[in-house]
Image (cartoon, rainbow, N blue to C red; front, side):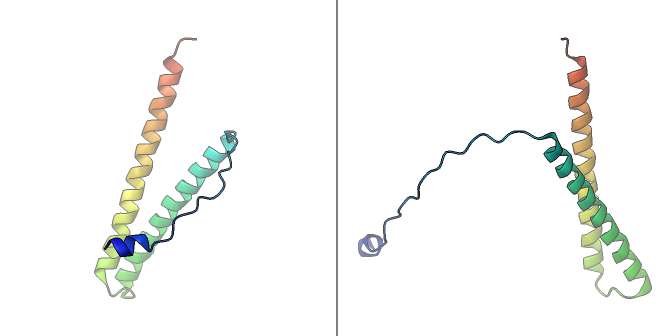
Amino acid sequence: MMKEIASLAPIQPGPIQPSAPKAVDNNDFSKLLGEVVNQVEQSQVKADQAVQDLNTGKAENLHEVMISLEEADISMRFMVQVRNKAVEAYQEVMRMQV
């Protein structure tokens, strides 16, 4: 066992480059939020299509349809919670006395 450990080559660390602090861009947050909303919408569309396929007989596996429905449900619930937290944060900021 000690022979195997000794045969391992030592790890050579790479050069460490200090990174400058990244400037916060408000557009980054809005883009991220827009992408998340689009993903939630796509999961909803996928679930709707899966249900239509099941109704028309195109989908043979009920489990896949149920999984897509649950994914859409979970993503929508997550989005609602994010919205609730954003509203709470906004209300808290508005209550602050300047």
